[in-house]
Amino acid sequence: MIDPKLIRENPELIKEILKNRNMEKVVDVDQLQKIDEQRREFMVKTDKLREKRNSASKEIGKLKAKGGDDSALMNEVQGLSGEIKDLESGVERLNQEYNDMHLSIPNILDQSVPIGKNETENIIVREWGKKPEFSFEPKAHYDIGTDLGILDFERGVKIAGARFYIYRGLAARLERAIINLMLDLHTKEHGYTETFGPFIVNDDSMTGTGQYPKFKDEYYRIDADGLSLIPTAEVTLTNLYRDEILEKDNLPINVTMQSSCFRREAGAAGKDTRGLVRVHQFQKVELVKFVEPETSFDELEKLLANAEEVLKRLNLHYRVMLLCSGDTSASSSKTYDIEVWMPGLDRYLEISSCSNFLDYQARRARIRYRPAKGEKPVLVHTLNGSGLAAGRTLAAVMENYQTEDGNIVIPDALKEYIKD
RNA sequence: GGAGAGUUGUCUGAGUGGUCGAUAGAGGCGGUCUUGAAAACCGUUGGGUUAAUAGCCCCGGGGGUUCGAAUCCCUCACUCUCCGCCA
Figure (cartoon, rainbow, N blue to C red):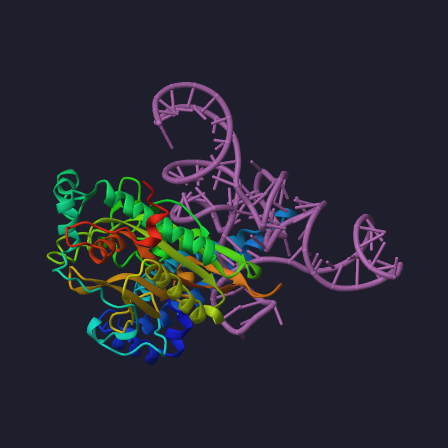
């Protein structure tokens, strides 16, 4: 959620954001303002009546205590509650309308975000390493894996359905090694606290990080229990401090968690149908930061560097993209994607996405901190990034470290995690 | 899953229809005293909305009864105890 004051005081800015994000049709800002005015008018009216009722009731209480006659006052107030109730339902209706629209407004964009329609207008910030050269035609990871018998898509389909897979032997061990490398790096060298928590969360949590209510059909929901499978550990981690007031001295808080991630990929029919690129369940190590507002853009650079370091350790060529306005997700104010080179697929593949959400998630989830003793609590800024997606990292390792005879060389950085 | 008990402010803990946003203690903060500290004493100390130290809202969530609800009723969630089941 963006600051409601911003909608009131600077509607033109909201319109501009919507336009830059190609979301002009999502919210009618003028309509929203009208509703806002109306609901505030209703609220003032309701409060006035409440005040009247409260003081009259107190009066009655006093009279009763003295044994006086309260029938006149009683008659006067009798109808008030009904009237208040009517107004309240009006306020509730307007609030509902307002909130629905408010929740749909995307975050403001940082100045440095380029204006653009879609991913073709993202900007290459930097590249690291070089594309590996092969003396043979490099294979895609799914061919390597299937030929080696370590990736089994057929049985994944049999057991669960399309876009599921089985790791056997080396693939399973490699991914576990990759996860361990990442967790060790982030906890021992980058200062994150290793955390572990639920993969299944309630609706408040899904709303807190922005998954609900808008994108509900993108996630698996267990209706019987009102719970959802997390699409990323960001949900678990960011909601750690939902409805809490943090101590300034504890900031920044950096946490990391590995989890399975579950996505329905509802809109992705026909896209990336082969291999590990787009699946319903994958593992990921997530990085989340809770920081003071002034520091959040510096922290974004740190977060990005922390994620990049994994690829450096694995010696995988990658590039960093600054997403343009049209490609930046609704709750983010600025997002960098890290794209790893996939020689078999012959293209770059997104392997991490690092975002600064400013106070957008914090406002939804009511995560605050106290800047100084005695001062009012202030919303923190939240950030998160993949550090990295493990399944895609496995695929990248397989493609980049393949040999002509169809085998995979274990990267140096993983050797201590795979000991025979 | 069955039976029972509970959910109040940073914490402990009162409050069962009427000036209760809430007694009291602890803790925190400020002060007096002290060379300093402790002790003692005095004061202060929730969140939201708002221009507001006005009003309004918040005693697990939602709904109801009432002129009036932290207090009564319904419902949901969670916690604890016992039993059952279980990695």
